Image 1 (cartoon, rainbow, N blue to C red):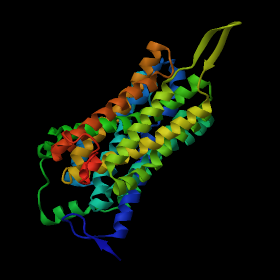
Image 2: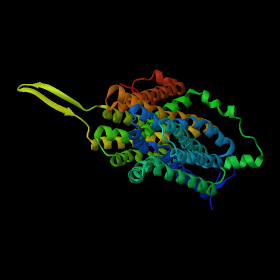
Image 3: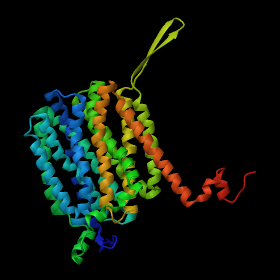
Image 4: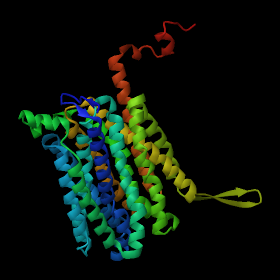
Length: 443
């Protein structure tokens, strides 16, 4: 059996690495399915309580708030006491909260239960810190990309929950999801072991780094720039995963099952192709992948932003009327493309963290995940508010266009500043620099 050394910890076998990776990925998939459960059951609750779009947006986004805010603490606790214990505790707590949801019958009660259900979303910070410790730096991009593919849990909810909800009601959906999460917690704990760094520290009797010491890297503006990237690639992904069923029902008049299926066509590539993003980040560099992500996202959100519009042209023989509108098929294709490139970006962002901050993956990964998760909380509320204020369905994509254009601009100018700092001659050699670098001279 082959073994590899990871950091300063004792060597671990390939079988141990794979068990930790795939058990964590499966657990995160179930957690994500629970975390996004309101994208489906929220539609029936909305009808039941007569909620407006703003209230609906707040309901589906509330679990995202909890799952975001606790990520920093959970990431640090993972570094301190080990991901195996923290991951298991998170799943058991979220399972109990999901079951509690079925005991509520008021809007305020649902909001309270939704806050507790959101604990499931904190599993991401735990898994990132836990999985990264099992792999050497040159393989972390691929490993974290595989783990992050657990986002496909959103598609599991979109495909399975509508069928159960139509047949048995949303209470049954919540009960099944809660039971699945509890079972997963037990299986995960039995299959996995403490990560090698935590095991080595416990064997030596060394004390974990203090909580406040873990927060020191957060002083770097670079961490917050990574957070903005993740606010879009992950926060907007979660927001759209929650919002698309509502968008498709309202904008195109589809039924819940069809809307959930099309929503899954966005969620699946935005999850599974994260593996490709991790592999590409290891091969060609995370920076290049981020340029691909933001460039294509700007294009997709611009096209999706254009509202259905009727034009009247005064022709020679009288008015000529025509309409520009996007049908369901081109909309689905564009959303699929957007999801694909967002998935690449999610992996690329987290490729940076163990490379730049190898001893603070929990805290830095936690805060980046927290800000990204807050995007998943704030954006659905903003989508609902924009609908109520403007009455334009595509206003949600207008907001995303502004967000990704801002992220692309900041990233580009930050990279240019770093290049000038490392290569001062760039500021003077502005004409055909590739010829100058080769020793030639323009003539």
